[in-house]
Image 1 (tube, rainbow, N blue to C red):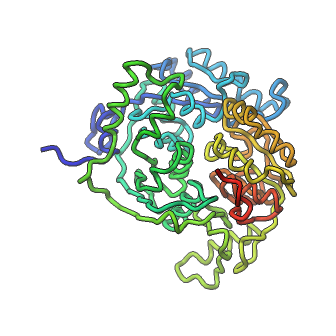
Image 2 (tube, helix red, strand yellow):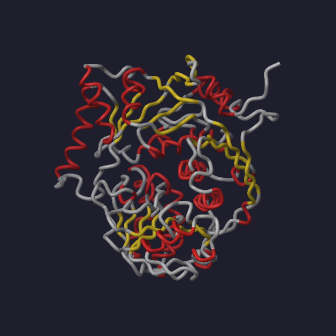
Length: 468
């Protein structure tokens, strides 16, 4: 009798070619996504005169350095050269490239799902830590380093040791204005930035089943901020409805066969997890970070921690974070003035994110400047068809082109030193959005609320009567 298996067990077994004596598995890679930052790996191939092993399974996307303005004339030579290098490598190795002028261009972790390149049961790699996003579809997806990228390019395989599995089970009904971003920041704050280290996370429970695919992608995207190697959600009807008709998804009888196979991608009832965490979704409030790590997050209704009241060895790190963030201990986080806002990134740059931000901003004026960068050209087009761009522009925010943008600032979109930004991105590390920048992570709805009031604000009163 076969023992009960987790979803990770099933995905791992389906891709394992050989198991080494030291416990590392050689895994077949179904999709390899590359971007401008992959130039080191291509350089390694050039040094050894090696071609890409499976060019039809490798897809190149311009995203990290993609300008959000004036794309027709890129003035910064570094940005221009990085994009041109990707173009040359894609051409040399006969890779499909989603270039700046391609109507399918966008952030790699937005483009993959919306094109149907991301499918349940696949193993997906990319030289980007937030590759965990694709796990929302029941795919085995994780980020890899430059040397590993080169290995995948050359062999279409990767060596990995199988992680332990943590299940985070969330039941209960999320309240109005509470999103997957709040779920993620909530559990990361509870368990810590290393709370899931060495684990794959499988999410389950009624609160997870009720999330849209956009919400599920946000949750899996942020899994690594709690130390996890990857995030997983078993595919279901929500997954299948999202994927049907996507350009690279199966069609006809192949679609029906695929759905039948995907339906079996779930953890067996009697399977055991290495660790389990249970949360109640109805207890989660809109959440915002106050420090320099995603774990330094609190409900918007709470007070900034006081290091004098901490006795668990974290007092010093709290002191350091508050000093950098220029925040007083013990005061409510709500009411903290902000200088600018940003909506976008692979965490929260999808159409659902823009819709909720626009719901808050409609008919209101922003008190601070801000930038809205859609996650892809298709999201941008859809938002414009729905009139969301006009809402942002009328509110006084800038409507830009898609790319990683102000999440990491490689394309020139930066928060200036000492300026405080309410951001829908994934990391609030020191200098992440620019040297000396002060970043508060929150949901797109909370970012929009901060734009309207000019300070960190509980979005729930501003959403009353505005949600369908």
